[in-house]
Length: 307
Image (tube, rainbow, N blue to C red; front, side, top):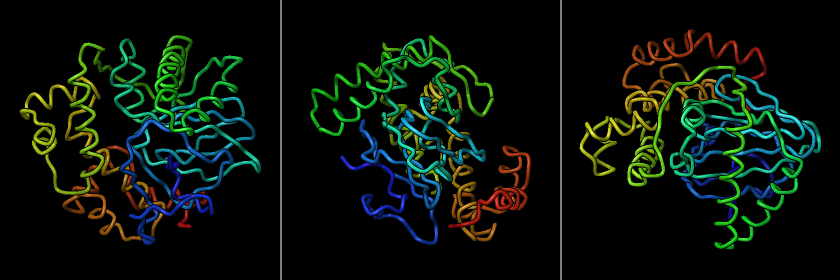
């Protein structure tokens, strides 16, 4: 299996075929349950996005992410997870920092019962950190990585079951959002397997087409659902309306372009899927409480200039 770290400039990591050198933001279309091959953490050339939930267990050293406009540092022995559709980038790390990186399809989380608040926080962009670690975590994450990289389907299914139990323990033992923001309520249970599949398909469609001119009706139609039913199921599962999810994805993309490129604000607005500059300014200001120009200036002052 190939790791999903194509923006890292390392000879062991392939360049993503859709990578436009003018736009360092890379969006992956991979949806697999897999492990990253790289153990040593490298600085990334720019932000990237992918549809899976990403789990990081830091073995040694520490690393700093740019994540949703914040700088978050994760150190040795810490376990974090987040939704890969939130643009993220390793901007710094101690020399020799190593980590285990696992990628889990979103359907894994949508199908877990009794994780309402936890799951909703993830889909709303939380960087979740487990507040209680187990003595066996280091060894078991190393084993999971080895078994997933073996491409043995039987072992992968065992890892999936064991990881399910570990995530349930995180929810039970305690966790915190490193961004220190709250979350709302949404729920789908084990009995909703068909709806879980529909929501996953809608999330994928949004991830792959949000930068185009799409509507909530288009998202529901792709999943083979009546628009009203699609909107109801999506809102219940994710905690956002379909239109809110589309706008959020566009704004996440715009954030990354503002930091990682020298594109004009007008170009950023159109590249991120907004039909007009005024609509982009309004949506960006509503979410981030500052104008795009101010956001870019503030991030650049922190060393966030294009690579």
